[in-house]
Length: 305
Image 1 (cartoon, rainbow, N blue to C red):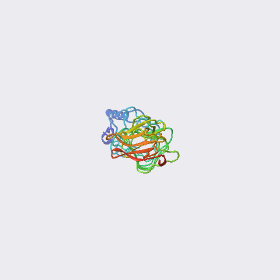
Image 2 (image 1 turned 180 degrees about the horizontal axis):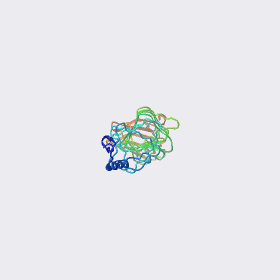
Image 3 (image 1 turned 90 degrees about the vertical axis):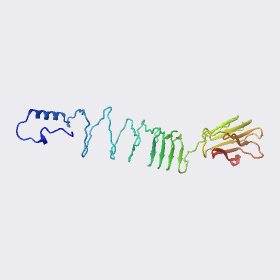
Image 4 (image 1 turned 180 degrees about the vertical axis):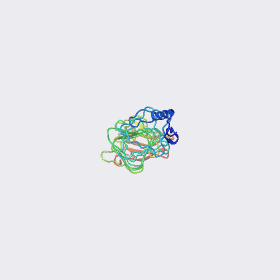
């Protein structure tokens, strides 16, 4: 039933006797009606459904949904907020699988709030993306695809749970921590005091195994007093990765130097570093992982370094 029933059929009242039951029905109907002036509390036994032209509500004060309430939009429904309106959300906002959140205006995540993409989800930005420096860190733990201009003024962390793809110009003014793979379809340019920091370690004074997952460059100094062998394993290795070993100022002693070998598919000597001044002198070498194995890419002395 869409509304209360007529006490008399079609609501037609002719002059005559009004019966007690009719007055009681009118009284009961008025009792059940919503008081739009004074307000009150109503607890309908079944949902109130408003169809037709819909409902226009002009809220002057504050409206509340009680604990345990649900506001549900069925498939095909739309929630529209015109320019100048605001939505303040202090609780969790969850978008279920297959849903889409589209903003044509500004979405502000207030101080101490969290915008989180769970593992297995995708964050895809086709427009401009900007983080404002406020002493905080933006953290992304899933796959991220940025297809337009991105400006990260605050520190940003991309977790190891997903890859990051930048298809447009991207600026990092704060520290950027990349835990997963990074794909850039354009140049990587440094400005100001920006630089790429290598993971540099001092060379061991005894035989040692290194991997590209831990180090980019190994620097051996003149204090090396014996012959050592550095083994390069395949941990963290993939096509195109590089590792560099340099040893400047080694004594001109045939018994002092660094032999460099790869461990896979079997231990194989690639080259050696020495302080000798005759013969094939190499004070630095660079290895590249190519075709599933480590290969010698470049070598030389300090003068062609």
